[in-house]
Length: 249
Ligand code: NI
Image 1 (cartoon, protein in one colour):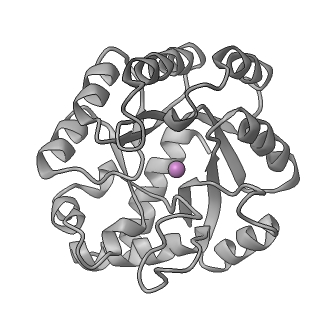
Image 2: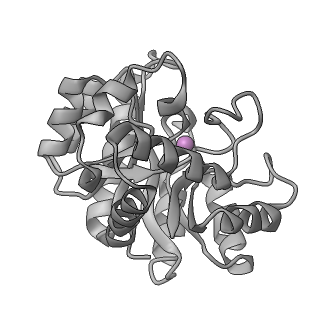
Image 3: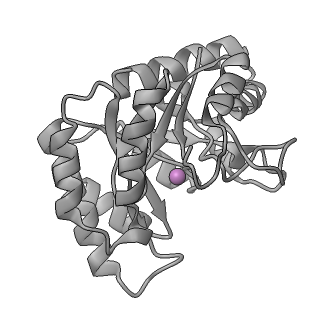
């Protein structure tokens, strides 16, 4: 069994979500965790989870949507606190690549959501782009289970995160021909890794250029197995164990 721990299976990107889940299942991906990124997609994933088996969700506001209402998010989370498919707070974090004029506002939103995660005892799925230092400093203030989604940092950063017990989300980027990420992840134990796609973005080789979907977690698992010189079964077993534990799925 494989798990796609991070996908955006939204109506905006896919006409046939059941078809995507079936295709994933045919490649051995049994469970998909869909991360909302704003208030609108929070409502959407809650509805989808009623319709689809093996579809779990995280609720949160992505830093690019910093103007969405935190109060509304709090209400949505309170209303869904007992929903067994609600498994984490995400996608949340800091993004200084797209928007650096509102750093303070981003940090404030990030912290508000980390407090929610503490309150409801949920893991956090963190997006961090060109904001490593602030991400580390802010996360240090909280005692949380952390998934650094789409990790793409240096060896040093990987060490800092794994020493704290954080998990690194690995997706299609590792398969890209010029990716330094390969050298970094080669030395990170499987005990610290999660597999993801970030669908519909970041499609792995050899499908690069097409829209991504959760079935491609298989390509990431295969790539990691080759990179580390272990069997695909070992990658599958260890990363799925991590996902099952962290997200209680
Ligand atoms: Ni994402």
